[in-house]
Amino acid sequence: MPDLAPVTVIIPCYNCSGTLWRALDSVIKQSLLPSEIILVNDASTDDTGAIIDSISQQLPECVRVVTLPFNAGPSVARNTGWDLAKSPYIAFLDADDAWHPQKLAVQSGWMDDHPEALMSGHICVEYRQGPNNVVTDPVKVRCFSLRDMLVSNRFSTPAVMVRRELALRFPKEKSHAEDYHLWLFVTASCERICRIEVPLAWYFKPAYGASGLSAALWKMELGELNAIRSLYRSSYLSVPEWLIFSGFSWAKFLRRGIAAGMYRLGYLQMKVFVHRFFSQESFSAHSNSQRLSNQVVKSFGEEWSRFPQHVLTETERLEIFDDYFSDFPWDDLPEESRGADIGCGSGRWAAVAAPRAGWLTCVDASFAALEVARRTMAGQGNVDFRQADVKNLRLRMANWILHILWVCCTMCRKHRKHCAALRGPCVREECFSYTYIMHSTTGPRGFACCGV
Image (cartoon, rainbow, N blue to C red):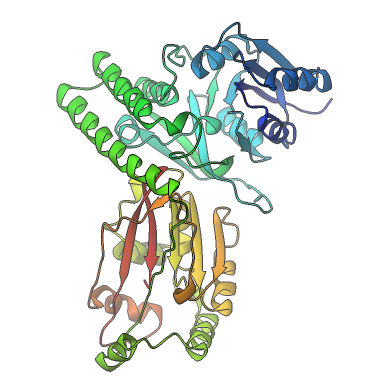
């Protein structure tokens, strides 16, 4: 008998006939199969019941079916499965999401190595067609305090694994933000919870503005405010903290409402024109609609191909990166944040930014530069590469609000400070750096670094 992960997988099912097989398929294709799978039919009115019966007949050795007499909501469905579970760990999967093949092996292994952890999570990103990244040890882990969690929900339900003996449960009276409510109280009870910084789960629709529970923005907001109020009533928050975080929640709600409206409008085309000016004359030439020439693209590609990536040690690279981007709110980025490094060159900065984001798209007009960037970021599982000229660049912005918060336009002071370390004396009279920080519909910020 093959080794099994000591995990019970709980999938609440309500009118999910179109997606349930996809979710279950991602479970049975795990590199380390779970000990048991519990499907909780929450009184579905479509063909979900028939599909569940078919699944239980095909996989009788590992699938248990629980049918609720009436539609009780996701909290009751998950709690019901949780109470029936036999394995040491509980993993939750929604019927419209899916897992990376190594999810259970990586996460249960981490929980085994950290017996003090009552709960863990990992990054969850929008699904992209393509081969799965192979996860290797050791994995990077980031931990969050209660204050971090109040700023932003850092965990999606399909990413969470808890210990069966955890006394807390999903609030059964809630059907919106019930998961966030539980994560907050787990964090409050154990001071911090940790997240594996690897994308091990996928969602197939944007968190806001599409169908499903998260599309009910007003009810989601009421659920979030109720969770914050419950923390206050449980003496985890002072009165000032309760008021501050409630106000911050209202601000996020307004932003999400705008984001949902933009999603319904469809795709936005973002055109970012990044120009590097060596003199005022070249600035005037660009102002007269001079376009990026093939010769310039070729020269940049040759430059990055010759660039000695080994000149800087990892410590030096991080120091310079922190100096350049010290004002950027990296800690506020949610797990599902998406960014773009437009004009990525060798990828030396993208390699540092990628682990801090949910997904990073590296764009450059030069194929040679992108080849260097691929080598620089070999092993990064949350990066894709796109060869594009800025004049015809199209990014899928349906789940971003193009909300420019910060435009940094400097006269090359920091650049000159580090030019000697990077590639010799700075010959530029003027150097402009544009950084656009964009709101994401799935969290506080996405970002794009252009011409840095």
